Every structure is written in structure tokens, then in C-alpha cells.
Image (cartoon, rainbow, N blue to C red):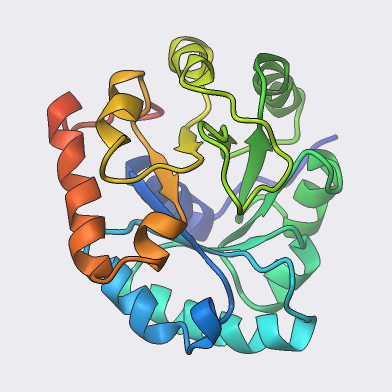
Length: 234
């Protein structure tokens, strides 16, 4: 399978992804509220990329929320990603889509979104990390993977925790950018970074915080312990 070459828009999205460290995943209406105040607070604290993920909301609710996510992400010049649905991601003008192991194939998703949008894939094992790299090499490019969940989390019910061992493995083998995920917060983020992660993805740590800006800023400061620079493609 082959795809058209990327445009300048695709290059800009990938550069923003390359330099991103802190990824925030949020529902359409967190806590039943308008997402705008939370998104602004998170982005003020240093979030680099935002995903709209809502397994319960219907399409109309997601579309309305996506208008807010798109507008706020444009204001802060960060990528806006939609979970699961490549066609919906394109209709709401997202910068890309994130799919899981049980969603449509990477090849199908890439065919829908084309070469200029970001494609992320969840991985939960060494074999899945290896498979993601193989698929990407064979012509259906994956822009990044998430690795975890490190800890059991209610956002992934029934998904066994992988622990830090999988982060160690990804750090030593992955050439695709990867985001560590799964119950990461201010109490354990340093352990995750010391295990080799250079990008993290959080949900509850920011969403449920009394001061989301302060928590996001604190998570960002943790990267100083492992060095701030990410090499191109790193």
C-alpha cells in the first residue's frame, strides 16, 4: 500500500508531535461541564497535544465538543487528536486520530486520513510494539504509539497493568515516538521518566486536579530530571 507524500501541513503536525512531551486526554464534557476552562488550564500549564476521547457520548455531543477542542488547540498551536474514528476525525478537522488494537486496522485508518494527518496506535506488549514498527515500515505510516497502561486505570477497564518493564523495553527498542500512559501523576512521573519515557500521556492527573494548570506545569518540570532536549526523530 502506498500513499501520497505529505504536505507542509503534515510536516508541521509532525514537528509539533516530535517536540511534544505532555499529552492530555479528555472527555467531551469532563464532569458534565463545558471542556473549555479545563482545556485552557491544561494548555496554560504546558500540555503539548490534546485528545478528545469519549466512549459514552454520541456523535452529536462529540461533534459539538470537537468544535471547542479545535478552537482552543488552534489558539495554543497544539495538535488536536480524536480517538477511535478516522472518518469523524476528518469531519471535525482534527489533526489526526488515535486507534486501539481492537479498532480498524492501521492500513484502513491511514487510507481514510491520508498522509497529512497524525496516526497514533495503542500498544500493550512487546509484540504489539514490534508489530507497530513492522506495519509502519511496510507502508502504512504510524506517527506515534502509546505504551501501557503502566498502572491499572479506570479509563481502561479490564486492561492489565504492564508495569515499567514495558517502558524500559520501548525506550531501548522503539524508533517511533512513544508516550507512556496509565495512571501517571506527580507522585510517579519521575519513575516513568527514569524508566526511559520521554513523553507521557495523562487523563485523571490533570482532569481531576483542583488546579490543572499547576499539575500540568509540575509534570512538565519533571522532564528537567532527564534533560529537556529530544533529538529529531527521538
